[in-house]
Structures are given as structure tokens and as C-alpha cells.
Image (cartoon, rainbow, N blue to C red; front, top):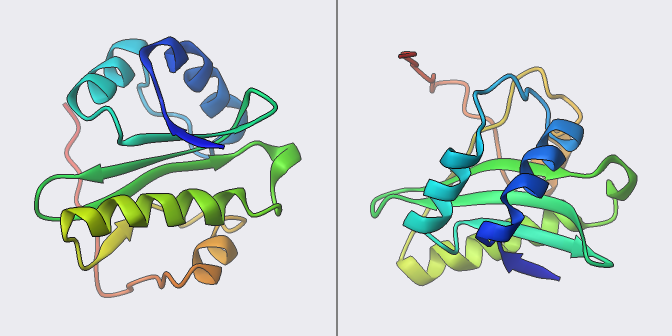
Length: 135
């Protein structure tokens, strides 16, 4: 089952990301996840198996562009179609907003994820770079 995350899920999702997401060196904290859910209650999608979180994706829409972040699937549930289903659900959300393109944040070193993205029709754009400023 895919559903939007709720405030009751925040701690569970943070623990899930530590176990299932690559590159979890970010500064995650409950307040940021709460802010996401409060600002856009349907952006953080959760895939459940037997009542437990088995996958997540953040389907962010800024009114101009569609962005995917934090696609993560529990190791014991990988290669079962969960990522594909989460991506499809996010894309349906974006289509309802009138989006015509979506981008995904995928770590270059997360080569285990690259085939999943390719299998769902995504391609790496070599000509684009991401510029970041930390504060």
C-alpha cells in the first residue's frame, strides 16, 4: 500500500532512512520532516508491507518543477517492484499538477540505484551539474 506520510510516521521514517537510504549523512531531524509534511501533506510517500515501512520517496512540487528525493527501499524488499510503484505514484501526483518533466536526485556513487532509475525510463544528464552551498 502506498500512502502519504503522517506526523505519526516521522520517527519511523527517520530510522528507516538510516537503515535503507544511501548517503544518509544529511542533517535529518524530526522538525524538517514535520515541516515537509505540514507544508505539503502528500509529498512524502510511504510504501507499507504488513504495516511496516518498506519504501519511501519524496515527490516535491515547487509549482514549476517536479523533483524526486529519498527513494529508498528496505534491503529485504529490494527487487520486488516497490521502487517502480513509488516512482509511478509520484509521477501521477506530478501529472495532476500539470508537470511535463521530473528529475531525480541520485548519488553518482549509488550505483545499485542506477538500474532502478533506468528501468523506469530515467536517464542521467551528463550536461547538468548540481551546485550546492551549505549554511
